[in-house]
Image 1: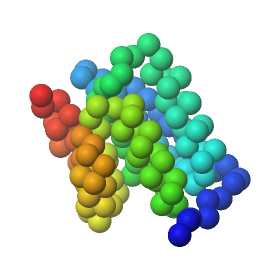
Image 2: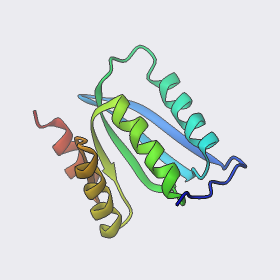
Image 3: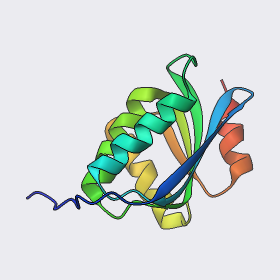
Length: 126
């Protein structure tokens, strides 16, 4: 069974800031199409130009809507390819459980949090 993925691009913004030991990525808006995922990845890569890969990231997706499972899966795969470790800030406990289960299934060093302090702490542990 395949998912229907919308074609029209959505509106979203990302902000990228280098922090000591990791990069902070904050997303706002909607990423609902494959075109959106491509645009997000290009923006992220442009901001990270010159930064070594793999690296650690704190990805705040509390205000980022990802309404399509197929798009979420593709975004996950691209984030896993780019980042060695990623702490995801999520809007609810249920989203955290889903994200943590996805990370386990994909064998990714990703973990979901509701607290920015806890997320940063986890990222900086070696």
